Length: 64
Image (cartoon, rainbow, N blue to C red; front, side, top):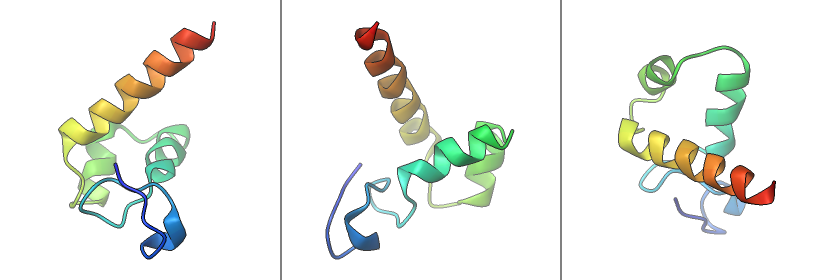
């Protein structure tokens, strides 16, 4: 992941892409699968997507 004020207004994006991380969660909320999301955004790598999901899960688990 990266955040640069010169790229997408500083939003957190998947490294090496212009795909904001929130796109992943918005698409999942809309019912798309990880594979469908990756097909829609060919610059995304499945490993990076799975890493973000694992990190989100870890953080949510720590908050409980």
